[in-house]
Image 1 (cartoon, rainbow, N blue to C red):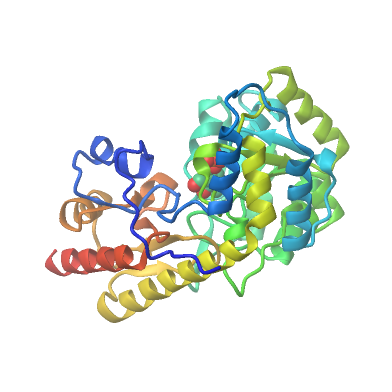
Image 2 (cartoon, rainbow, N blue to C red; image 1 turned 45 degrees about the vertical axis):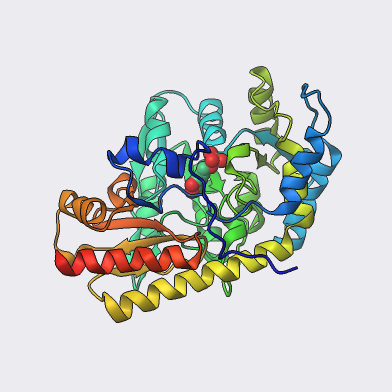
Length: 387
Ligand SMILES: Cc1ncc(COP(=O)(O)O)c(C=O)c1O
């Protein structure tokens, strides 16, 4: 079946954060919304169908985890990544960010140090601090257009930390960490007694020719010191269903985390939590491959447009996902001036790089119909040239 990603779907009035929150956040409603990370493509029909089937029954009571939920996850990890996992390694978490907060509460005390790698997804900065933990930073180096880890600094920075939040693939840089890099991280963290939380929410969006390698699969050390968090929410555009899961192969870590979840009933799930995941993973391959190819086309378009029409603006070419980190440092603007250019002149709602601790950058979400991306590029060019 051929899916249509060119279709413009009006999301106004659906309480969609990406659209309906724009006037509140930016104080104006005329911005093209290419910010928060969900897609303007229809959630695939096989997921909508699974939800609809459930709604055919008129009682929405407490809902159990189904064997199909676990078996679909096990099969997906095996088929897509060659990672053999067991159903009992899994648990439900109501979103990746809540999952990160649960891990922090379970394995650390107030004041304990947690390592992050800025520029990085902003809840990694706020959640540990909101929970009273101490943030440590291991800044990534931008070399030859991609982010890299300086392992000498990493080794020093991680020493004494209790947790390391690994964004894999990385947001906003779109970097797919290699098996070799992951093995080095595992070797260091295992030796230093640091638990690695591997957030793999963007894994299914890895763009050819890159391959996602699950962190926990790279070595015995990685398996022994890690908690993986995953969800079909990004890849299948179902973030509003808040249905994610943890995978923990190490028995001691697993027992402790599962008890933590169960004590406060954090892992109950909801009436759509399990059937939606099973539907995505059981029927999703063809849709996902077509969607990724469309997104790859959007990214190619942006890259060629900037190179040809607006060479003052650079971009980090994502190896995974639909988020493009645009590099405005060449314009020599302050962050406030850059925001004024993007909002007041280009009329675009993008994520300010400063929120990820990436000053001089703006994050653009390219998961929209091509015509919308073309319009965004036109606006950006006009505003930049007139500035
Ligand atoms: C790296 C990363 N982790 C987690 C999330 C959010 O996950 P959730 O909505 O399941 O909390 C996002 C959303 O953009 C993300 O980019």
